[in-house]
Length: 228
Ligand code: GRF
Image 1 (cartoon, rainbow, N blue to C red):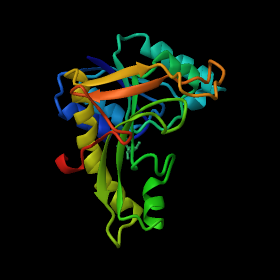
Image 2: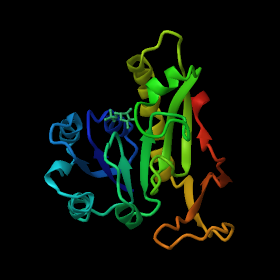
Image 3: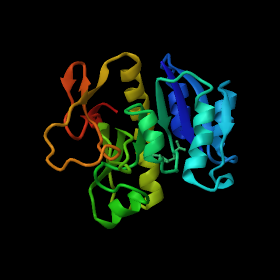
Image 4: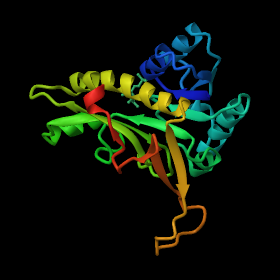
């Protein structure tokens, strides 16, 4: 199984995937920031890297065309977003339908977007966590594959909670990628006859059903809290 990993920063999730020795090929690491620490991590592991700086393009579309040119240079089964901080357009997403995964530091659907840890603290939540999900046109809204809860401690700062959640991220992402490599996780397209509110084709998102070891996963995905 061949992956491209997209990063924007330190690449600790990329490093976790490398260290997990999953028997998958990370064919390419692309960063939208030339100063991303994850580029050195990739190079150290002998992985081809590319930098496509979003600031050099006058539109999301032209930035994504450059991304697609880099991605077309390798054969890919999945695109793994790992700390990638750019929103992808439906044009890009539909080119890799149900083949793009993301890790998000909250228990989705709670706290989509940014500053997830401070928002959980401000809300007085006793739990925060991490979600691995499919990327769709809705930001942080795709089908959830797996989640893990992480306790929020009374005196937590956002940084302390982020560090605690990151430990779980580094276990959850390799676990999900291993499921794909071992063909244990199945992403099945299901026809969506149910919805009355037919939207125009370019907005019509095909629904997927997720199966782990032939068992359909619930809305919240697999709860990995107990095994991380
Ligand atoms: C992580 O919390 C990840 O969930 C979020 O970006 C942070 C940094 O990721 N998307 P990494 O260390 O660059 O993998």
